[in-house]
Image (cartoon, rainbow, N blue to C red; front, side):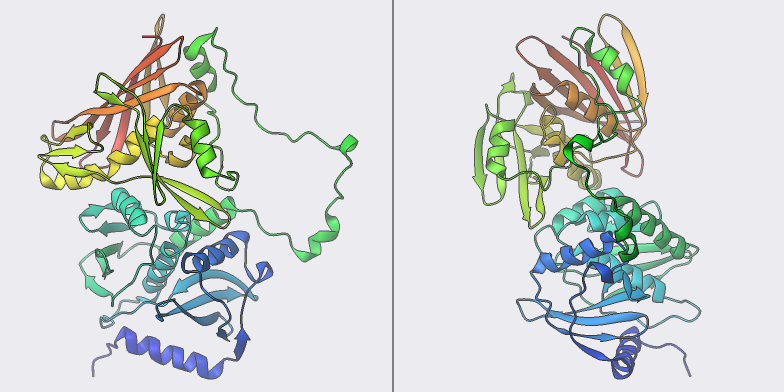
Length: 475
């Protein structure tokens, strides 16, 4: 007799047994005290918010988990499992359908739990929980024709405004890889795990991220230890890193030299903006602004019809703040990528597969640069670990090596505050088989104009791995 068993049958049997032996409850609505940390608590509410779920449904309890079924507005039922220990929830998952048979000698339960946690986070309103969870250095990710980092970003954007609907998941066991094929209402998601991957260690790393992102909650036993708020005359000044000093007299070179080891921090504005229209008009007073639903189209000046300042982005409103994402809208026509009526980027040096891999990077790259000098950059900037070389030319030539391109943009954003920014990609070329993007950046005010040429290099796996900026001060 074969010892293979259908995953669906196994899960149904387990759930039936679980419901039979565990106590049922009236509506279970967990509070902060029911979660292991703030991160899990906020994840729970973000998942509810994405579909505006009601919570007054009964739940079943066992020693290790809580099982609860939610109902969407379309009448679909979503079953969720909450793992808990000592009556505190430490993981949350959507129960997914599977149609494959369980192969001999392969324990798949840990992989299934990972996938169910991943889809749960992708179905949260705030996609940061999904990005925190998926480490493309440890797993292989495909979405449609995209892979790894590109797939991660395209997948995030594809489901910004709708729930991921998963059809029964298939399995492909290869020699050194276990591949799960997840059909959705759009494109297939494929997740590959090397057979020797330590998933326990990977989940441990995720838990570390949770603790770093949001501090542990205050335990009830600690409340008496909290000192009363001091009176105004007794208040202590909060200790924090000093802001970089911008002194035009000493110039950009000195500013970079003094601050590139500790660039300005990204400012979190998600819950600080009361009116998005007022915010945009204040940051871009000289732009014409058009709004279509939640999308904003900002039209600004250009330089010789070659270097543009236009911006396109979309605003996602949330109960606890807003999220602003660069618009990915574009057209491909006659081997050109068209961002707006006049702005075209030639793709003639790329084949169709290379075009599919590179094009998704371009809108975010373009609009993040054009947001320099404004508070909008805090939303559009993506932190990275791309080694960056800055060649700075003023009265002399100076070279700086930075571990992250985002650090350089934060420095320039601080220095170029309130300047008019122009940026365009002017060429996409191939050198020794590698793809390189060339862009030009101009930052100007009534007194100065700084000019930069930027080269973005992609490796054979279509990952951006090196950036060089040649920055000419007051050119």
